[in-house]
Amino acid sequence: MDLENLKLAAQIISQPYSQRAQDAKKQQIQKVKVLLTQRSLPEKGWNEEEIQPFLCELRMMDSNNYLGHAGVGEREGRIYSSLVYRRNFGFAHGMGRSGDILELQPKAAGGSLVAKLTNSLAMSAIKESGISNIKACVVLPMATGMSIAFSFLALRDIRPKTAKFVIMSRMDHKSCIKSIGTAGFEPVIVEQLLENDELVTDLEEIENQIQKCGSENILAVFTTTSCFAPRTPDKAIEVSMMCKKYNVPHLVNNAYGLQSRKTSAMLNEAIKKGRIDIIVQSTDKNFMVPIGGSIVSSPNKAMIKVISSTYPGRASISPIVDLFITLLQMGRDGFKKLLKKRKKLYSYFTDKVSRVAEKHQERLLKTPNNPISFVMSLKTFDKVDDLDSSKKTLPSMLGSMLFARQCSGSRVINKGVVKEICGIKFQGYGAHSSKYPFSYMAMSCAIGIKKSEIDTFVERLDKALIEFRKFSQNPQRNVPQDLLVYLKHKDQKNHKNIQNFKNSNLNSNQNQNQNQNHQLEDNQLENQIIKEIEKDPKVDYFEINENSQK
Image (cartoon, rainbow, N blue to C red; front, side, top):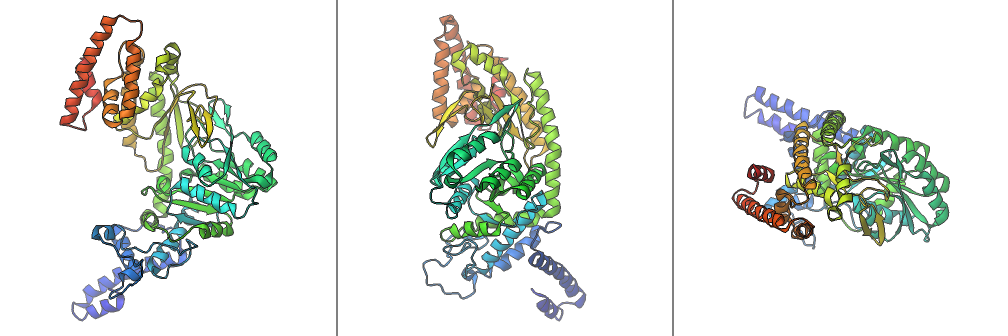
């Protein structure tokens, strides 16, 4: 009902009631007008009752939703399932045209408007976080790793044909490394420097590699500004000045950096003083939407044009609609509150973990230059490794124990792990360095985290460490049963590894009768746990284990 129809309705119902409806409608019309004119985050977020009618109006602008429409092409936005139709709000034609993802789609005027507005809202959010020097961005329906690879392909069009190297400040994340190989380029890995507990950018070695490879043979320098501690965000200001000096493109992986004003301020200064061509951010990590989208931004509008024109064909609009709804509902005020809350909870989280660490003869590492992630040492378990070679993977079991207790996100890193990715062997993989001296567990205080989640995690971490230490200090005992059962039911491959680990304990020099007794006891306990799981899949494995021991 528009205003004219509401006036006509006054002839049917009384004028006062019609006037109230007109006043409410005017408020909604004004909100839409502000959005279309300012094209930025609304000061206060919209509610669902305001967003849904707006989306319904927009979808009616797409040809597949026209009344009486007759489509005779091979792609007419037909959707078989009504459930799928509702899930996508009727936006069936996607976004862009063949050859440019930013081009208007003739069959999807409403979808094209959603895509354009989402880009504007994303720009507004980036500036609100503190990167005011960004001039353009595009929201791509690809997660961060693929968007980075796609950005490398776009850079290929503006670089010499000899440019085949990507100089990457070491970041132990498969998607970062594989994004280079997927795009068809060769990674040149520059190790991090160890300074106290932190890993920092080796600026001297990056410059050495630029000189060694030659500027004309380098596609880009690739840095990361959001990562698990003890690695710190790369020194974007110094690297950007270096890239400006040697006239080499600079691509920044800022996956979840928008939730840190400190990181955003650094990137803003780097743009001002040096050269940054592309910054890639994740939509799910920064704005709490389903995985599948990323924001590619640049201080150069022409760079975004190159990226958008590299995209072949049309693109899915689903991740863009998710972000559009979220940013409208969040608003500027909601985003600012989330940033403030995250920063406050970071101090609370680190304090709680620090106390647990001290209780178990460990410590919270000093990583002040990483504003999102922090680390607890696992040195005491490394000592057990050194005494017993059969327990070389001992620290990593803590991560599995926590996951079995419905705690996700923490990352346990074993020292000295060797892994090959894209033909490159990484010593100490996971630690971002071949020389990190001990194992550790990294955690993050990310946007949207709740105080209750922190309390629950810390409580379970403390309990897991107690159980974990019992095993590590008593080598005739087998693997903790909660972990064994979890791995047996969730991952057969890991279970086989654990079983081999158990067998190595049984072959030790201890009394054979003791081993047999313990094996019998463990088998009885395992059978009991399996029966409990069959009754209730959500059973607390630790509770069963402790009760049985009592």
